[in-house]
Image: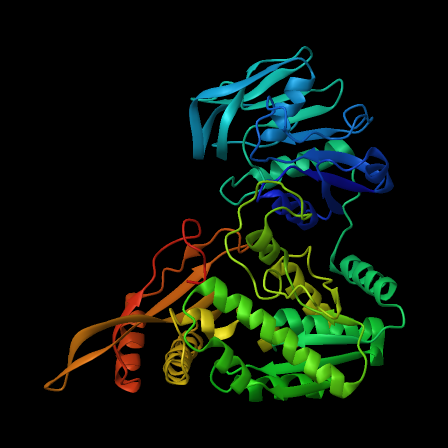
Length: 510
């Protein structure tokens, strides 16, 4: 029994699944155009029609399969999904007189979806179309100053719609609304990380069979957790290989080996620094850097695999935010989601890949992986480690990289991250990083003129890594970090702090 989310291309679709799972309800995402037979295989107790970039009155607009709206289960339409429900029931949808984007206050609300919710209700809007004529049997249960039809329901048919996004953190009481929908559906709320582990292990065993698996491991929480999961699923069929590409943080290679080998992970370290640095020589475009690093990763694994014997599968700790930012669309379809940047393990793989991919975490968020890691026994200092990108420091050094720049950036990063731990600020940040910029500026050290690099520090807080706020680190701490960096890293004479959220920026600079 589940809640099925039909994805029509919204970049927030996965957040709906995440919210339901947080509420203890098993939920799955299918393409918006999935067949009725495929939907019924999930034995749905409720269906959600997601948002999306299309307009329901366009001929090319995506639509659910025939028969979906006739199913005897509650259906919730979100944004585009609400507009589709209204149109199909005989209502009208037109271009809004005033587009709403961002936070809006509901001037009134009520009905079954809002049961038990009290006080101010702030909703996150993102729409240029609106329902302009209500279909028969429906009533308006919420409105804003600019959108008279903000939420609708038909209690007889159990059809509901909201023009806003209840799944995002910018709608603070959205979780309670989604919990009300689960109550309407009668969903048993017993989904937890133990269920996820059991399902992932079963999926891996079904995919791999008797094949041998080569794991791309970095020592971060994603690949380390994946190593433990795969070891439990396929045992000795797994070989974990750590590629030292010369783009790691200070002392990271030694830390990875010390952390994973005692856990019984069959870990092999490969020194590929010369190959990576040679391939990246003179390359400044960030997309090209990512693709080169992805290609070199695969080449390094292929070389290692030939020495170790035959491998059938390559395992990667790809998470869903990587998939969204790299390709657009949860299912590889033309959903209209934008390609923001390629991730080395999503958009940078060569066409002649000699392995089949195993990506058990492809539908999970970071917090779900951390909970799985806890249950699998991963040590806390690895489990709660901040995310670190597969391309490593190459995408934290703007422009072309070199051994010298990597050395500078390693020392700056180590001072910043060590400082966060020393001052008790590390766990309060979701991700922190240092960036070496190509900007050089005049400074004075002692009585001498300097002309040195500018380093940028960035720290963010986030629940889902889809959106993020810059971390409000204390001024005294930032002053201490700036002083330490310019005194200990002589190639740096200026330190700045990034105070941009996501959006409009991404967390990484490249």
